[in-house]
Length: 490
Image (cartoon, rainbow, N blue to C red):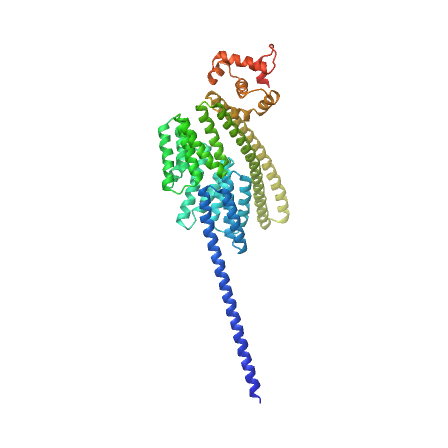
């Protein structure tokens, strides 16, 4: 009677034990299945982000990059894959920078930077600072861009994958080279050019060709343009690279005075860059197309493309100015935060060494000295900024004189930038003035003599006098008014 209940309890205990074991095994199985699916999704996102991004950039579909990367970011969020989110943000920032949408690009970089703060991924950190550098380059903040490229280089050199490491390093050197060239640091240009030659891209050879144009070495320039073109057959060059090569052939044919052929190349290049929304490249094409039409004596078409150049240039300049102001504010904020952090750390160090009473005295003194130093720094900075502004104005004026002397088609656009009030006042008050009338006014404003105007505008002295007489009539100026003085004082 007593054995049966004991047997029943023993059987129940073994059944319960077996059931718990099955639950544990089921839990482990479900965990492994979930983990396998998560790993598969991660691998799939990594693969797609790489292949799709490369393909779309090669096709020049930067809008497509933005659309696809947003999808990858959402997919990464669902499985809590932070690396996929960060790479997606940087890829979008890269595409936006190519489209000259720098403000949006910098916002995506800030998102990526916040997510990367606690991450030690050399590949993503190198990519992040590389795209920061490209943005600063696009905004003409070349010194800042070089600093970002240097940081990118430090991380790139630690990338474990050799192929990815070399690819990133060569890209960084290529952009650093361009930044050095804009700063006139030619020793650094030649040094980085030498490194870029291990894995050259079309713009490397095109830039070298541009230097040969300045020295009137057309044959040497043509040699490097052809070398750039040969890369189309040996490398997977993005569509933007093809557009750059077509534009380079257009420039070459302008130099060789084959204006019709130049137009074919330039319009083909423009078609690619307009489709890809590469506005800075459109700007370069507009200027060259106007020059080609000038060579063909098609003044209407020349003026049409000069107008397009002027409008797009004004738009890009406005956008750049707004973004640059934002960047400068951020730089000042970062500097202020660094100073606060340094000051706070100093406070803690002092607190452990000196008595409380001495600390209070020291902090008051230190704060006073810091403020004095900051005030002096700001004064010096203002002085430097004023000197820099004066230097830029002098350089701009010299450039304007150079354009006038060499009958450059962009002369009026640069004159308008330097004397906007003069230009706007005349055109608004005297709406019947033609482009040639404004050009004559510009020459007079620059204090050119009749002889110089005749020489630079390729007309006779008598024609200059006639033009002045007709212009005086248009402006309703009486005979007792000194015409030249009237223009200069306006």
